[in-house]
Image (tube, rainbow, N blue to C red; front, side):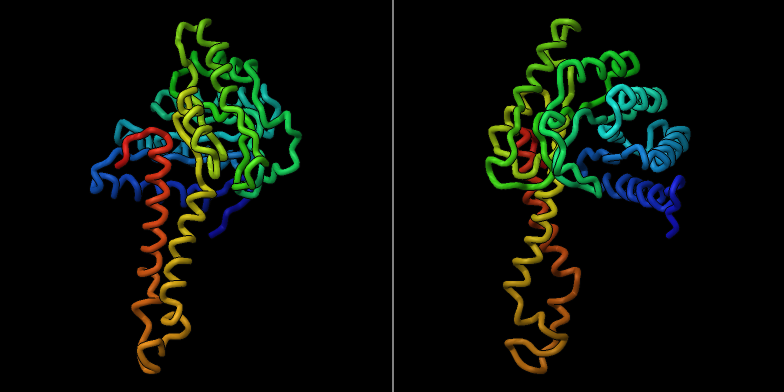
Length: 285
């Protein structure tokens, strides 16, 4: 499909189709489901605009937005510009009850075509002033926003010792603002780059106000691992359409049928998600 620069019509179509699909099947599972869009950089704002237009149409017809939340990732921009653009969009989102996730500081590593592997280490840590500006700008609009503050986070998985998380920074941000506004923990934080993190760091981050954690890299591996295990266990049946350990004329369709091995991937990914629920001290579905 065409996905022209400045329009991103295919990106809009794909996101909205996915949101409608989730809304249609979610009731069958009997659990609460959020529909979220992630990591919209400045160059992708036409995509964000298209999703918001879909939200407004759906809201007019149903009294709620199509998406539950959207993320603006303008962390590559100057901090004041980042917060200012977020404010403009949040004023449009708030009347529909849409949650805004925004990012300050920079998450290291590489993700979705953005490579921050060489970023200066001081950029990996937000400051109390950074978080207070977000609060002062967005809280008068609505309390429904979250901050992906940087506390040493890095996308991907690295050898122990290569990533130095400081979740105690999140606690310092809460303590800096809390007495000024009368809340013990005024901020809702997001933990980007959670894959490969120590369980103790995850636990501390949750205690200090993290309400969402991204584990894309770990779930990608979990999905692949299901396929890998299946292949290793059934490799003799996966070398051709005909012929396996049971006989040269035996068919192998039951093994290479994607419905077979995709299910194995889904199961290992499910198990990794359950592990993440436990790490985050959340109820396990």
